[in-house]
Length: 571
Ligand code: WT7
Image (cartoon, rainbow, N blue to C red; front, side, top):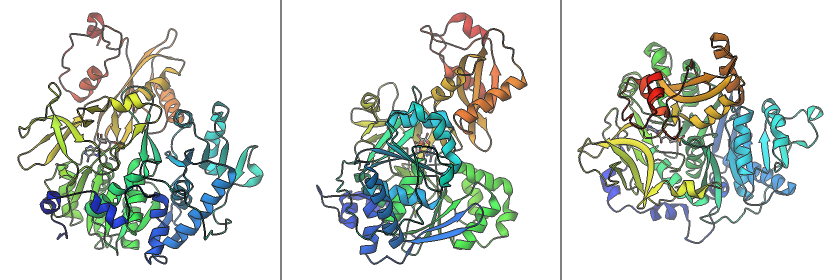
């Protein structure tokens, strides 16, 4: 695969101002991502170019040009402004991957609002936690999800508007409004909110070890990183048909499922359907997808279906493949090389980083199993957890740290500046992931340095699961950890002690599982519940998930000296 760029060469005197220049951004000037992803491309002569080729789960298809994006996002933006929504207010998108989601994303930014995308599979409690924390003013949703909003609305006094984009008006309740994109006239002129670099743009909720999920606060200036990393790492070229598997409820689905490709004027194809090897290969074949951004769990699912299925399709349009979200095992890279003729290029980053920070750059030799090297302009290292000093010895494991700032790093956690400050040490942003660096400068992921569970590339917070478990009447105490899984890398396992009068058994296990699935999501649902008499705790009473996790992974438990004696024995 020949590449136009040479990693070593461009790393030498890299400066983010190269990206500013390409985008025509001038320091101190306006920079509105919504405008950059629609109007600007029209100004550059791409009015008629398809921006979105959309396919629904039933096979229905729609295409929107960049001009459609411009006119329709203007339409939604004017509508939202007309409701009285103010710049800086949080507007939530709670929808499947339908065109309205993508266009409203741009519209909210254009009217100066902060977009809060939430995964539509979230149950009512996960939804409530995030809307309550953000003080969300309006939510755009679909008929099929509005029931969840109804059940929590009386606990959300700040939520002024519930907007249903596919409503059957006769079925709407009081204080709910119908909005139809198809019936909204295109709007030629809209006064785009004059956002500047530090104006808040997107609020993504992400899970940590302690407390409820945190709102990672991005700003419009993130575009500078997202534009260039999309162009260079995903190797986007003008004629590409780009496909990103991620849902915009997660950061990959916004940074590289909306902002990166569209700011580059690239056509993207979106499939609003779950996993199916045949469906996916058929989608690539039909739309002549050239660049594909996927994830390890999906690749492992494809591997499971075998090479035969691959051979039934013409996938020769594919030129470049990337992966994100969880460790990309060497086997998956080798498999794709053999089955698809191309290796998946791993990319590593986080909600907080806003853009890809470590990657197998196109054209750079891929070492299967390694995440690659820092993106030019990102200064990375691994720090010794004891001394806090960078480790200079190849192969020695430390915590991945990134020298702050770069354009797309989050500016704070919503209403939690102290939590944000804690992420930094001596100017280094701490990722809480562990890795080693080899003699060639390639990074090798080892694991997370905290208790967050990564299931199929989605982070779930143990605290959120434990809090929900405690709401079940039978549960007295709970701990949630990741246990190994061949496809999803890890899945949630819960350890539970029962309250007086309850006895364990399969019925109760299933009941609790469903309780969590409904409240939170299928991702957060424990795949196994182990009923125990007690949980390992520190002297101060804190549950030590590390012990339970080590047990699941067959790893040494480590220092147990701070645990309470009898409880340790109880395990
Ligand atoms: C966490 C971030 C990055 C956008 C999607 C997830 C894990 C991410 C990799 C990778 C191994 C990875 C890390 C990271 N992770 N990419 N290439 N190899 N692990 O964003 O939800 O904030 O999750 O996902 O543990 O910290 P996120």
